[in-house]
Image (cartoon, rainbow, N blue to C red; front, side, top):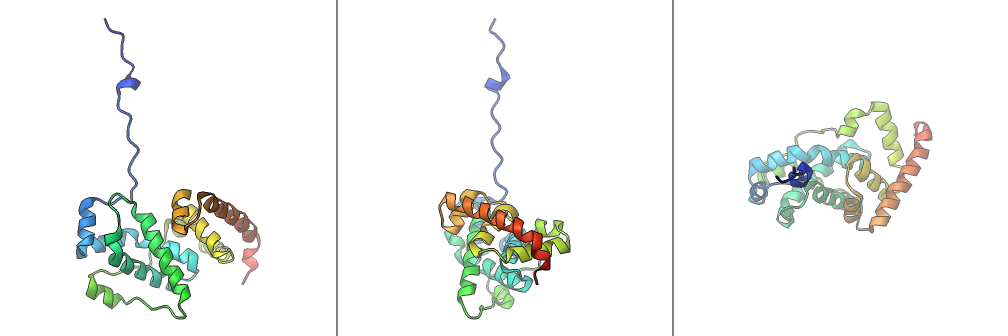
Length: 206
């Protein structure tokens, strides 16, 4: 008689769950083809994350919404550069980052027209959805955090927002910011230290 087999040696090891922001080849094909319904669903799925990210960087809801609209316009224009199997959020954050940087390089932001979006692709950014972090914070706490964030150097502010409010890995932050992994980690660490100090006094900052 053969000895009993250890189930741990025979049972398949469960695979790690796939990231929630992977898109199927079928959806990517629909997006690349400019299908109106596919883009409408895509925008609804990710507009809140993009708005929350840009609001944290801008500190202004109107500017953040304008930039969010432009991000999805640019995403539509560049969807053919998206690689199958790539995660959507890091790609969108890169688009958003470039959009925000370019907006500050111009003397006056060229506003993206919702009418143009409807005419071109048939979708629109429908609402100022708050991110989960925004929804969880009280109005006073959110205001204090936002004022503290605005006092950080831009690269520190972006790094800490991506890490703790958008839940990206250090590798992804390094890729988005175009820096070494150690630099990304250092920026997050220094941003945390500065935020801790600022939040003690930011309530008195106008």
